[in-house]
Length: 449
Image (cartoon, helix red, strand yellow):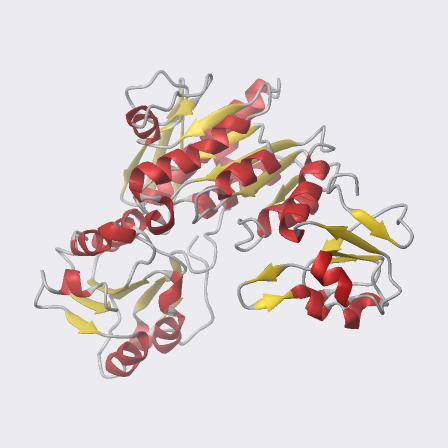
Protein backbone atom coordinates (compact mmCIF):
# COMPACT_ATOMS: atom_id res chain seq x y z
CA UNK A 1 0.00 0.00 0.00
CA UNK A 2 2.60 2.54 -1.09
CA UNK A 3 -0.24 4.96 -1.87
CA UNK A 4 -1.02 5.52 1.81
CA UNK A 5 2.45 5.78 3.29
CA UNK A 6 1.29 3.42 6.02
CA UNK A 7 3.18 0.68 7.84
CA UNK A 8 2.32 -3.02 7.92
CA UNK A 9 1.91 -5.12 11.01
CA UNK A 10 2.19 -8.70 9.80
CA UNK A 11 2.64 -10.08 6.31
CA UNK A 12 2.08 -7.75 3.35
CA UNK A 13 -0.58 -9.11 0.99
CA UNK A 14 0.69 -9.72 -2.54
CA UNK A 15 -2.51 -8.56 -4.25
CA UNK A 16 -5.50 -6.61 -2.93
CA UNK A 17 -8.61 -6.82 -5.11
CA UNK A 18 -11.33 -5.14 -3.02
CA UNK A 19 -11.68 -2.79 -0.05
CA UNK A 20 -14.80 -2.64 2.10
CA UNK A 21 -15.78 -0.06 4.72
CA UNK A 22 -18.99 -1.73 5.91
CA UNK A 23 -18.96 -5.08 7.70
CA UNK A 24 -22.64 -5.73 6.95
CA UNK A 25 -21.95 -6.76 3.36
CA UNK A 26 -18.34 -7.83 3.83
CA UNK A 27 -17.11 -10.63 1.54
CA UNK A 28 -14.34 -13.10 2.25
CA UNK A 29 -11.00 -11.98 0.83
CA UNK A 30 -11.72 -8.26 0.97
CA UNK A 31 -9.68 -5.75 2.96
CA UNK A 32 -11.62 -4.00 5.72
CA UNK A 33 -10.88 -0.27 6.10
CA UNK A 34 -12.21 1.23 9.33
CA UNK A 35 -13.65 4.73 9.06
CA UNK A 36 -14.39 7.11 11.89
CA UNK A 37 -17.38 9.45 12.12
CA UNK A 38 -18.97 11.77 14.67
CA UNK A 39 -21.09 8.93 16.05
CA UNK A 40 -19.24 5.75 15.09
CA UNK A 41 -15.84 4.09 15.00
CA UNK A 42 -15.42 1.41 12.36
CA UNK A 43 -12.46 -0.07 14.21
CA UNK A 44 -14.82 -1.53 16.81
CA UNK A 45 -16.61 -3.55 14.11
CA UNK A 46 -13.54 -5.28 12.68
CA UNK A 47 -13.36 -8.36 14.91
CA UNK A 48 -16.34 -10.27 13.42
CA UNK A 49 -14.89 -10.07 9.87
CA UNK A 50 -11.18 -10.26 10.70
CA UNK A 51 -10.89 -14.01 10.09
CA UNK A 52 -12.38 -13.55 6.60
CA UNK A 53 -10.41 -10.42 5.76
CA UNK A 54 -7.24 -10.38 3.70
CA UNK A 55 -6.10 -7.44 5.84
CA UNK A 56 -7.35 -4.62 8.05
CA UNK A 57 -6.60 -0.91 7.62
CA UNK A 58 -6.84 1.39 10.62
CA UNK A 59 -5.30 4.40 12.31
CA UNK A 60 -2.88 4.18 15.23
CA UNK A 61 -5.57 4.21 17.90
CA UNK A 62 -7.66 1.69 16.00
CA UNK A 63 -4.80 -0.71 15.27
CA UNK A 64 -3.99 -0.77 18.99
CA UNK A 65 -7.51 -2.14 19.55
CA UNK A 66 -6.68 -5.03 17.20
CA UNK A 67 -3.64 -6.28 19.10
CA UNK A 68 -5.31 -9.64 19.67
CA UNK A 69 -6.21 -10.13 16.01
CA UNK A 70 -3.75 -12.12 13.87
CA UNK A 71 -4.89 -10.70 10.52
CA UNK A 72 -2.36 -8.44 8.75
CA UNK A 73 -2.91 -4.77 9.54
CA UNK A 74 -1.95 -1.58 7.71
CA UNK A 75 -1.56 1.39 10.04
CA UNK A 76 -2.22 4.84 8.49
CA UNK A 77 -2.52 8.34 9.89
CA UNK A 78 -6.11 8.87 8.68
CA UNK A 79 -8.28 6.13 7.22
CA UNK A 80 -10.54 8.45 5.19
CA UNK A 81 -7.47 10.03 3.59
CA UNK A 82 -6.04 6.56 3.02
CA UNK A 83 -9.22 5.48 1.23
CA UNK A 84 -8.89 8.47 -1.08
CA UNK A 85 -5.18 7.83 -1.66
CA UNK A 86 -5.83 4.22 -2.60
CA UNK A 87 -8.64 5.24 -4.95
CA UNK A 88 -6.41 7.84 -6.61
CA UNK A 89 -3.68 5.25 -7.13
CA UNK A 90 -6.23 3.01 -8.84
CA UNK A 91 -7.53 5.90 -10.94
CA UNK A 92 -4.02 6.51 -12.24
CA UNK A 93 -3.94 2.90 -13.48
CA UNK A 94 -7.08 3.46 -15.57
CA UNK A 95 -5.03 4.49 -18.57
CA UNK A 96 -7.66 3.48 -21.13
CA UNK A 97 -10.65 4.91 -19.28
CA UNK A 98 -12.09 8.38 -19.90
CA UNK A 99 -13.05 9.66 -16.46
CA UNK A 100 -15.95 12.12 -16.45
CA UNK A 101 -16.53 13.99 -13.18
CA UNK A 102 -19.79 15.86 -12.60
CA UNK A 103 -20.52 18.49 -9.97
CA UNK A 104 -23.02 21.31 -9.52
CA UNK A 105 -25.84 22.44 -7.26
CA UNK A 106 -28.47 20.60 -9.27
CA UNK A 107 -28.81 18.13 -12.11
CA UNK A 108 -25.78 15.98 -11.21
CA UNK A 109 -27.58 12.69 -10.83
CA UNK A 110 -29.91 13.18 -13.79
CA UNK A 111 -27.02 14.13 -16.08
CA UNK A 112 -24.93 11.24 -14.80
CA UNK A 113 -27.68 8.71 -15.47
CA UNK A 114 -28.42 10.15 -18.93
CA UNK A 115 -24.74 9.92 -19.86
CA UNK A 116 -24.52 6.37 -18.56
CA UNK A 117 -27.63 5.38 -20.53
CA UNK A 118 -26.39 7.02 -23.73
CA UNK A 119 -22.82 5.71 -23.66
CA UNK A 120 -23.97 2.18 -22.81
CA UNK A 121 -26.57 2.16 -25.59
CA UNK A 122 -23.84 3.20 -28.01
CA UNK A 123 -21.88 0.09 -27.09
CA UNK A 124 -19.27 1.51 -24.71
CA UNK A 125 -18.24 -0.21 -21.49
CA UNK A 126 -19.44 2.23 -18.80
CA UNK A 127 -18.92 2.33 -15.03
CA UNK A 128 -20.73 4.98 -12.99
CA UNK A 129 -21.63 6.22 -9.53
CA UNK A 130 -24.32 4.17 -7.82
CA UNK A 131 -27.01 5.59 -5.55
CA UNK A 132 -25.67 8.66 -3.74
CA UNK A 133 -22.02 7.61 -3.41
CA UNK A 134 -20.70 11.04 -4.35
CA UNK A 135 -18.81 12.31 -1.28
CA UNK A 136 -15.38 11.72 0.28
CA UNK A 137 -16.42 8.16 1.12
CA UNK A 138 -18.58 7.39 -1.93
CA UNK A 139 -16.29 8.77 -4.64
CA UNK A 140 -13.30 6.56 -3.73
CA UNK A 141 -15.64 3.57 -3.48
CA UNK A 142 -16.93 4.40 -6.95
CA UNK A 143 -13.42 4.77 -8.38
CA UNK A 144 -12.28 1.49 -6.85
CA UNK A 145 -15.23 -0.26 -8.52
CA UNK A 146 -14.21 0.89 -12.01
CA UNK A 147 -12.78 -2.09 -13.93
CA UNK A 148 -9.58 -1.64 -15.91
CA UNK A 149 -11.38 -2.37 -19.17
CA UNK A 150 -13.98 0.38 -18.68
CA UNK A 151 -14.01 2.85 -21.55
CA UNK A 152 -16.01 5.46 -19.62
CA UNK A 153 -16.28 6.17 -15.88
CA UNK A 154 -18.91 8.72 -14.84
CA UNK A 155 -18.20 9.98 -11.32
CA UNK A 156 -20.60 12.25 -9.47
CA UNK A 157 -18.94 14.64 -6.99
CA UNK A 158 -21.02 16.28 -4.27
CA UNK A 159 -19.77 18.58 -1.53
CA UNK A 160 -21.17 20.45 1.44
CA UNK A 161 -18.06 21.81 3.17
CA UNK A 162 -15.04 23.89 2.16
CA UNK A 163 -12.05 21.75 1.20
CA UNK A 164 -13.99 18.71 0.03
CA UNK A 165 -13.85 19.49 -3.69
CA UNK A 166 -10.10 20.02 -3.64
CA UNK A 167 -9.70 16.52 -2.24
CA UNK A 168 -12.22 14.95 -4.64
CA UNK A 169 -10.77 16.68 -7.70
CA UNK A 170 -7.21 15.65 -6.86
CA UNK A 171 -8.43 12.10 -6.33
CA UNK A 172 -10.46 11.83 -9.56
CA UNK A 173 -8.30 13.93 -11.93
CA UNK A 174 -11.02 13.96 -14.61
CA UNK A 175 -10.51 13.86 -18.35
CA UNK A 176 -13.85 15.67 -18.69
CA UNK A 177 -15.09 17.96 -15.90
CA UNK A 178 -18.76 18.94 -15.92
CA UNK A 179 -20.34 21.79 -13.93
CA UNK A 180 -24.11 21.50 -14.32
CA UNK A 181 -25.20 24.73 -12.65
CA UNK A 182 -24.69 26.55 -9.37
CA UNK A 183 -26.97 28.11 -6.77
CA UNK A 184 -26.74 28.73 -3.06
CA UNK A 185 -27.48 25.05 -2.33
CA UNK A 186 -25.18 23.92 0.53
CA UNK A 187 -24.27 27.59 0.98
CA UNK A 188 -24.50 27.03 4.73
CA UNK A 189 -21.20 25.16 4.67
CA UNK A 190 -19.58 26.92 1.72
CA UNK A 191 -20.03 30.63 2.39
CA UNK A 192 -22.85 31.74 0.11
CA UNK A 193 -23.11 31.54 -3.67
CA UNK A 194 -19.60 32.92 -4.21
CA UNK A 195 -18.24 30.18 -1.98
CA UNK A 196 -20.23 27.54 -3.85
CA UNK A 197 -18.80 28.75 -7.18
CA UNK A 198 -15.22 28.88 -5.93
CA UNK A 199 -15.39 25.42 -4.36
CA UNK A 200 -17.07 23.62 -7.25
CA UNK A 201 -14.78 25.30 -9.79
CA UNK A 202 -11.83 23.55 -8.14
CA UNK A 203 -12.84 20.48 -10.14
CA UNK A 204 -11.55 22.29 -13.23
CA UNK A 205 -8.07 22.71 -11.76
CA UNK A 206 -7.35 18.99 -11.88
CA UNK A 207 -8.28 18.28 -15.49
CA UNK A 208 -5.92 15.86 -17.18
CA UNK A 209 -3.51 17.20 -19.78
CA UNK A 210 -5.81 16.90 -22.80
CA UNK A 211 -9.00 17.23 -20.81
CA UNK A 212 -11.95 19.52 -21.45
CA UNK A 213 -14.94 20.81 -19.54
CA UNK A 214 -18.68 21.13 -19.97
CA UNK A 215 -20.38 24.17 -18.43
CA UNK A 216 -24.13 24.28 -17.91
CA UNK A 217 -26.30 27.31 -18.54
CA UNK A 218 -25.10 30.35 -16.58
CA UNK A 219 -21.95 28.69 -15.26
CA UNK A 220 -19.55 30.66 -17.48
CA UNK A 221 -20.95 33.96 -16.21
CA UNK A 222 -20.69 32.82 -12.59
CA UNK A 223 -17.07 31.82 -13.09
CA UNK A 224 -16.21 35.19 -14.63
CA UNK A 225 -18.08 37.07 -11.90
CA UNK A 226 -15.88 35.31 -9.35
CA UNK A 227 -12.69 35.98 -11.33
CA UNK A 228 -12.23 32.36 -12.37
CA UNK A 229 -10.86 31.81 -15.85
CA UNK A 230 -12.83 29.60 -18.20
CA UNK A 231 -10.97 26.44 -19.18
CA UNK A 232 -9.75 26.13 -22.74
CA UNK A 233 -11.97 24.06 -25.04
CA UNK A 234 -14.94 24.50 -22.71
CA UNK A 235 -18.26 23.23 -24.05
CA UNK A 236 -20.86 25.70 -22.82
CA UNK A 237 -24.63 25.86 -23.10
CA UNK A 238 -24.84 29.66 -22.94
CA UNK A 239 -26.31 31.11 -26.13
CA UNK A 240 -23.81 33.96 -26.35
CA UNK A 241 -20.74 31.73 -26.13
CA UNK A 242 -18.84 30.26 -29.05
CA UNK A 243 -19.91 26.66 -28.77
CA UNK A 244 -20.77 23.44 -30.52
CA UNK A 245 -23.52 22.26 -28.21
CA UNK A 246 -26.98 20.89 -28.92
CA UNK A 247 -29.71 23.54 -28.96
CA UNK A 248 -33.21 22.53 -27.88
CA UNK A 249 -36.83 23.55 -27.70
CA UNK A 250 -39.57 21.89 -25.70
CA UNK A 251 -42.99 21.93 -27.34
CA UNK A 252 -45.40 20.34 -24.92
CA UNK A 253 -43.75 17.00 -24.27
CA UNK A 254 -41.82 16.90 -27.54
CA UNK A 255 -38.13 17.73 -27.19
CA UNK A 256 -36.74 19.15 -30.43
CA UNK A 257 -32.95 19.28 -30.77
CA UNK A 258 -30.54 20.66 -33.32
CA UNK A 259 -26.79 20.13 -33.73
CA UNK A 260 -24.93 21.61 -36.67
CA UNK A 261 -27.24 20.90 -39.61
CA UNK A 262 -28.96 17.92 -38.04
CA UNK A 263 -32.29 17.75 -36.19
CA UNK A 264 -33.76 15.06 -33.95
CA UNK A 265 -36.53 14.76 -31.41
CA UNK A 266 -37.77 12.58 -28.59
CA UNK A 267 -40.93 12.45 -26.52
CA UNK A 268 -40.86 13.09 -22.78
CA UNK A 269 -43.45 11.75 -20.37
CA UNK A 270 -43.63 15.19 -18.73
CA UNK A 271 -43.17 18.71 -20.12
CA UNK A 272 -40.08 19.10 -17.92
CA UNK A 273 -37.71 21.80 -19.16
CA UNK A 274 -34.99 20.70 -16.73
CA UNK A 275 -35.09 17.20 -18.22
CA UNK A 276 -34.88 18.72 -21.69
CA UNK A 277 -31.85 20.82 -20.73
CA UNK A 278 -30.04 17.84 -19.19
CA UNK A 279 -30.77 15.61 -22.18
CA UNK A 280 -29.43 18.24 -24.59
CA UNK A 281 -26.38 18.77 -22.36
CA UNK A 282 -25.70 15.03 -22.25
CA UNK A 283 -26.08 14.77 -26.03
CA UNK A 284 -23.57 17.62 -26.43
CA UNK A 285 -21.04 15.86 -24.20
CA UNK A 286 -21.45 12.49 -25.93
CA UNK A 287 -21.11 14.07 -29.39
CA UNK A 288 -17.96 15.97 -28.38
CA UNK A 289 -16.45 12.81 -26.91
CA UNK A 290 -17.27 10.51 -29.82
CA UNK A 291 -16.23 12.87 -32.58
CA UNK A 292 -13.05 13.74 -30.72
CA UNK A 293 -12.19 10.04 -30.76
CA UNK A 294 -12.70 9.62 -34.49
CA UNK A 295 -15.89 7.73 -33.74
CA UNK A 296 -18.06 9.81 -36.04
CA UNK A 297 -21.55 10.14 -34.62
CA UNK A 298 -24.55 12.29 -35.38
CA UNK A 299 -27.37 13.73 -33.34
CA UNK A 300 -29.94 11.17 -34.46
CA UNK A 301 -27.81 8.26 -33.27
CA UNK A 302 -27.06 9.88 -29.92
CA UNK A 303 -30.67 10.91 -29.24
CA UNK A 304 -31.80 7.36 -30.03
CA UNK A 305 -29.28 6.06 -27.48
CA UNK A 306 -30.48 8.48 -24.80
CA UNK A 307 -34.18 7.84 -25.44
CA UNK A 308 -34.32 4.85 -23.08
CA UNK A 309 -33.27 6.96 -20.07
CA UNK A 310 -35.34 6.64 -16.89
CA UNK A 311 -35.20 9.24 -14.10
CA UNK A 312 -33.58 8.07 -10.85
CA UNK A 313 -35.73 7.12 -7.88
CA UNK A 314 -37.38 10.06 -6.14
CA UNK A 315 -36.91 12.41 -9.09
CA UNK A 316 -40.21 13.09 -10.87
CA UNK A 317 -41.18 9.43 -10.87
CA UNK A 318 -44.83 8.72 -11.44
CA UNK A 319 -47.26 6.52 -9.57
CA UNK A 320 -50.99 6.11 -9.65
CA UNK A 321 -52.47 7.74 -6.58
CA UNK A 322 -55.73 7.81 -4.68
CA UNK A 323 -58.85 7.80 -6.84
CA UNK A 324 -56.72 7.68 -9.98
CA UNK A 325 -54.75 10.89 -9.47
CA UNK A 326 -51.14 11.05 -10.75
CA UNK A 327 -48.40 11.51 -8.15
CA UNK A 328 -44.99 12.93 -9.09
CA UNK A 329 -42.47 11.70 -6.54
CA UNK A 330 -39.65 14.25 -6.50
CA UNK A 331 -38.88 14.05 -2.81
CA UNK A 332 -35.25 12.87 -3.00
CA UNK A 333 -33.78 16.36 -2.73
CA UNK A 334 -34.50 20.03 -3.37
CA UNK A 335 -32.89 23.42 -3.83
CA UNK A 336 -34.47 26.65 -5.17
CA UNK A 337 -33.67 25.84 -8.82
CA UNK A 338 -34.90 22.25 -8.77
CA UNK A 339 -37.95 23.22 -6.71
CA UNK A 340 -38.99 25.86 -9.22
CA UNK A 341 -38.28 23.54 -12.15
CA UNK A 342 -40.58 20.88 -10.68
CA UNK A 343 -43.33 23.44 -10.05
CA UNK A 344 -43.00 24.80 -13.58
CA UNK A 345 -43.37 21.26 -14.92
CA UNK A 346 -46.51 20.76 -12.84
CA UNK A 347 -47.91 24.08 -14.03
CA UNK A 348 -47.51 22.98 -17.67
CA UNK A 349 -49.79 19.98 -17.19
CA UNK A 350 -53.54 19.80 -17.75
CA UNK A 351 -56.07 19.02 -15.04
CA UNK A 352 -55.86 19.77 -11.33
CA UNK A 353 -52.37 20.83 -10.32
CA UNK A 354 -51.54 20.21 -6.67
CA UNK A 355 -48.19 20.73 -4.95
CA UNK A 356 -47.01 19.33 -1.62
CA UNK A 357 -43.75 21.12 -0.87
CA UNK A 358 -41.39 20.78 2.09
CA UNK A 359 -38.40 22.64 3.44
CA UNK A 360 -35.17 22.99 1.48
CA UNK A 361 -32.09 22.48 3.66
CA UNK A 362 -28.56 23.88 3.86
CA UNK A 363 -29.31 27.25 2.27
CA UNK A 364 -27.62 29.33 4.96
CA UNK A 365 -28.48 32.98 5.52
CA UNK A 366 -30.51 33.17 2.30
CA UNK A 367 -32.86 30.39 3.34
CA UNK A 368 -35.88 32.53 4.25
CA UNK A 369 -35.65 34.58 1.05
CA UNK A 370 -35.17 31.45 -1.08
CA UNK A 371 -38.25 29.79 0.36
CA UNK A 372 -40.35 32.95 0.16
CA UNK A 373 -39.39 33.54 -3.48
CA UNK A 374 -40.73 30.25 -4.85
CA UNK A 375 -43.40 30.98 -7.47
CA UNK A 376 -46.50 28.84 -6.92
CA UNK A 377 -48.93 31.00 -8.87
CA UNK A 378 -51.28 29.16 -11.21
CA UNK A 379 -51.48 26.02 -9.09
CA UNK A 380 -54.87 24.82 -7.89
CA UNK A 381 -53.85 23.69 -4.41
CA UNK A 382 -50.64 23.97 -2.42
CA UNK A 383 -49.66 22.30 0.85
CA UNK A 384 -46.48 23.46 2.58
CA UNK A 385 -44.52 21.52 5.20
CA UNK A 386 -41.84 22.66 7.63
CA UNK A 387 -40.62 25.69 9.51
CA UNK A 388 -38.75 27.18 6.56
CA UNK A 389 -41.82 26.99 4.31
CA UNK A 390 -43.60 29.45 6.59
CA UNK A 391 -41.91 32.20 4.57
CA UNK A 392 -43.80 31.04 1.47
CA UNK A 393 -47.03 30.42 3.39
CA UNK A 394 -46.94 34.04 4.55
CA UNK A 395 -47.11 35.22 0.93
CA UNK A 396 -49.96 32.92 -0.04
CA UNK A 397 -52.62 32.81 2.71
CA UNK A 398 -54.73 30.37 0.68
CA UNK A 399 -52.20 27.53 1.09
CA UNK A 400 -52.35 25.00 3.92
CA UNK A 401 -49.25 24.78 6.10
CA UNK A 402 -48.10 21.90 8.33
CA UNK A 403 -45.34 22.19 10.90
CA UNK A 404 -43.96 18.68 10.25
CA UNK A 405 -44.18 15.74 7.87
CA UNK A 406 -46.10 13.72 10.47
CA UNK A 407 -48.68 16.50 10.75
CA UNK A 408 -48.92 16.62 6.97
CA UNK A 409 -49.55 12.87 6.72
CA UNK A 410 -52.40 13.19 9.22
CA UNK A 411 -53.82 16.32 7.57
CA UNK A 412 -53.60 15.05 4.00
CA UNK A 413 -55.46 11.88 4.95
CA UNK A 414 -58.60 14.02 5.02
CA UNK A 415 -57.98 15.72 1.67
CA UNK A 416 -59.54 14.58 -1.60
CA UNK A 417 -57.60 13.77 -4.76
CA UNK A 418 -59.36 12.81 -7.98
CA UNK A 419 -58.67 11.37 -11.41
CA UNK A 420 -57.22 14.17 -13.53
CA UNK A 421 -55.29 15.68 -10.61
CA UNK A 422 -51.48 15.69 -10.65
CA UNK A 423 -49.84 15.89 -7.23
CA UNK A 424 -46.20 16.98 -6.97
CA UNK A 425 -44.34 15.94 -3.79
CA UNK A 426 -40.99 17.69 -3.33
CA UNK A 427 -38.62 18.69 -0.53
CA UNK A 428 -35.08 18.17 0.72
CA UNK A 429 -34.21 14.64 1.72
CA UNK A 430 -34.26 15.54 5.42
CA UNK A 431 -38.03 16.09 5.28
CA UNK A 432 -38.63 12.38 4.48
CA UNK A 433 -41.66 13.03 2.28
CA UNK A 434 -41.63 9.39 1.17
CA UNK A 435 -44.33 8.96 3.80
CA UNK A 436 -46.49 11.38 1.81
CA UNK A 437 -45.84 9.40 -1.38
CA UNK A 438 -46.76 6.17 0.38
CA UNK A 439 -49.98 7.78 1.61
CA UNK A 440 -50.95 8.93 -1.88
CA UNK A 441 -49.72 6.06 -4.04
CA UNK A 442 -51.50 2.77 -4.09
CA UNK A 443 -49.33 1.02 -6.65
CA UNK A 444 -45.64 0.29 -6.91
CA UNK A 445 -43.57 3.05 -8.48
CA UNK A 446 -43.63 3.32 -12.26
CA UNK A 447 -40.83 5.11 -14.09
CA UNK A 448 -41.73 8.40 -15.72
CA UNK A 449 -40.21 7.63 -19.12
